[in-house]
Image 1 (cartoon, rainbow, N blue to C red):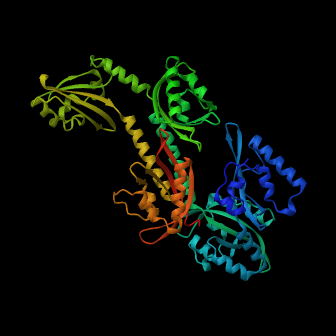
Image 2 (cartoon, rainbow, N blue to C red):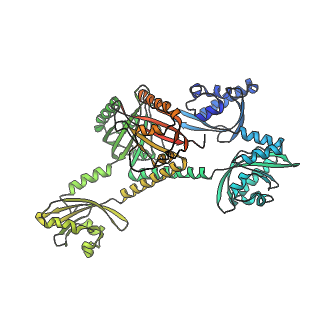
Length: 590
């Protein structure tokens, strides 16, 4: 049955979302076939294909661009381009599809065959680059082709089309052109074009054959997809950085859908649990089996109380991996509720704190035995001379004695030494960088002994993990900026909105540090949409469920934009305290 159906599909078919959701996909697909093609054999073949696809996740029609005629609710017919693919789930496979209305393009191609004059009007007013090619040479181009390539019409006419194709893609494009000339249908494909400036741009091409001035020619339609490619690469890079950051910081993430009982955990969590390349589906009972027998009762108690009260929780516990290795895990999580107010999903993070916990215990034990401590311990007397170095300090900082207080480890220490002379017992905590490594220092002043004791821990890997996370956040901000997506949260107790930089940009608001209230947000909504927005938020608060809405806003400069808001509630002890969401700028789409 259909479980997801967006506004774009509704606009194309005319079938409302509420009417489509829950409907058998076989019935839905057969229902949009034109009436004159709804034959018994066609229905049987369609049902067989979908049944096999759902069972195996494979189909000869999968992952290919295809075109078909559909019949809408109002009886009109449209030509659509679509691609279908499968996603593996815990219970089998889902079929997903992306549909694009290409009726206008098809109409344009038909008009091109019927009338050169009609072709000229359509071709010159579209944003897509349209070109007529004969024997690999341009014989006609539209204005958009000049914009895409940087060449003028006079320069393009007579030029070989393949000259603009990147050398690495030339054979593929040439092969498609030859197949098209032989009457074969060629799926839309992507290639790199080298434009006049020398810049390489990505283009998606589709086309067909027609008669132009008495000759058989290829008519190509090119869409510039360079920015879309960049966005995709940015998002892929962001995901890779996040995965690397999780690995460095030994922190994984998870969510637990309590309706189907399966947990979805990150790769880092699988590694912590001792798995190799395999990624089996896990239930709560499977996770519980990893918990140390002595910690299991407390683990179940904490999770049970959190479920009962639907409130955030945190817990430290031990696990025993299949290889017998024992690890210490810190877990934090919170719940989201369904429309009835019952918890239906847990979201959280797991952190392997084995090394941290054991290091802390080890350091506590070794505090009285500085010679045995694996971390540097240094004592400096009131005169500024090094009084004591344990073996770890001598090994890690061999130049410490020679440099004395000039060593980077002691930068600014003279100010702390004043406390020794004034009999002030204080502790200073700071981070310092020595060469390419970072160290955490705990500096104690001991006036009664007239000396300073410095405890040093190497935190280089932690620092690098923080830098990786900062890079990830920067990449995510970049991806938001490219895709015109902003994020927001509304603290209902404080009545304040927190917006990302991209959302300030979408609303045209200057970021000056002042807080934005719910009322200020409503003022940006155009008057005719304001009550609808208020009702959507009211329904979200009353029913406690995820919601979305599209409306128009007016910026401070008077510019009107179309946006789509999506949001979900954050509950605390059954009370809504915050709404988190995203905002899409859909002005260009509209």
